[in-house]
Length: 290
Image 1 (cartoon, rainbow, N blue to C red):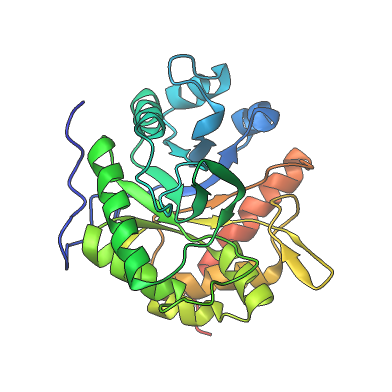
Image 2: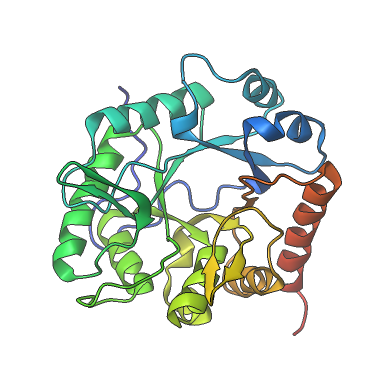
């Protein structure tokens, strides 16, 4: 395998090659949305769940969209970069093969704990934000970077709880991880909203503390409240509060890309196009006097 582009691996590393890449406004590719996306105007890039494709035989729709020149980013959901054990070589090899098959500019994954002792959590759980955990995750990130042919971006997760032994905020943990490894960031503003709603963690304070100069792209998604808990389901239009956070982010940095996630209860083509328009409007508001 060819050596990856160097995204920095020492404290104080400069932003990696992802920083400054222009992606535009995109949408998560799903089989149920293939024809919708093929005929939709205003889609600049795509993201596909890596575990749902075979690199040796890509879905025909992705082949069509790649032929049009749309960048496609493989997005992992099961690597477990936040696990106590090193990431699986087989899972890393699959991500690498996806990146190569898609000619992807980067690979993204979640900063999450997903398994331990052979037991699958079934969820993307928050990582215990301790100094010891930071040391372990740093090594896991470096292993992943060494195995991938393109830069890696890590996503903040939506949480229902926080670990009692946490020593750092999520933003502090991510900032130190970036400083140690040069890893890029995928900031999900819907997840920031979820954590604010469920745990009382200020989303704006997180934006202020995150090293947004390492931003690769941004996620936007919808969900709903049930029983006093916000559920990040990716099945509804993004609430205005999430789009307001996107505007807040855009006052601090220019995101290379912003991507809409929608995973079930798929709406009409017009509704999805409307969501992309709402995203563009939220981004544009950051450039106006407020």
